[in-house]
Length: 288
Image (cartoon, rainbow, N blue to C red; front, side):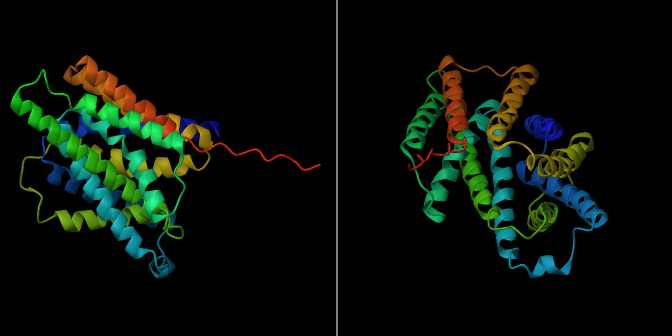
């Protein structure tokens, strides 16, 4: 279990550096996601064949439609969040993205008929207030303010897409996770090929790690480690991702935030943390 916790913590910390890697590629969002999908599909396909994950039964499981729809949602999430990084900042984009647990809860209520409790409603309100504080633009120029609002909107849409991908993922129980992700990456490669600027000068020193390390290796590590991580630790460790992203943004790009924006970011992360905690089991009194 200890090894799995360390592996999951490393994976979440690694995920927190994706924003820096994407920014350093210098590519537009569509092209960056295309190369991410292309390289990841090659790596995951090779790994899947080596491990013997592919079989005819997989394609007869009836899960293909959920895999493809989830892939579209996941790829759209990447395109939107990468654009959010550019229009706002790594810090504001990732903090806004972490409203995602509330989208997930809402979709669970609507699509899966899950229960919605009052505590979640309170944390949703706190997150909404935090979001309002983030998009306060009183101290910014008009152009910067419009870019900020657009970046926040992109990040919110990315969170919604990721929540949708998560809901669809719950329908996939027979297909190995590596095979599922490979198929989604292959889909992204095919769909984005006509839209990507493949002829551009590519910084392979950043593009290759984006697909091989920050996608293929990262997803395999998450799938292998999360199974043995105690449920109560998954949410806290998952927040290594935004923390590392924010630290990277401050240390590498010297991003400055207003006091209200800092309060807003903290409000969103704290509310998302508590909202994503698993419900405590209710004690049932024994009859005598």
